[in-house]
Length: 46
Image (cartoon, rainbow, N blue to C red; front, side, top):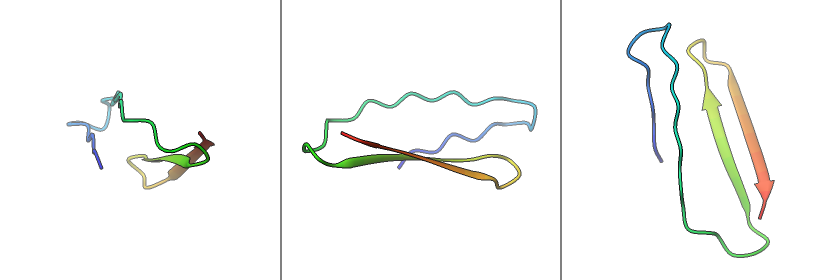
């Protein structure tokens, strides 16, 4: 798990991840939590 936290509330965070491909038929997920605690989960079948 990797975490990026901005130094100030006005700052934006940009991250890029490269991971080995999981086995076919797996599901990959990304969870984003903003400064107010709102969550967004994105999933994709690979």
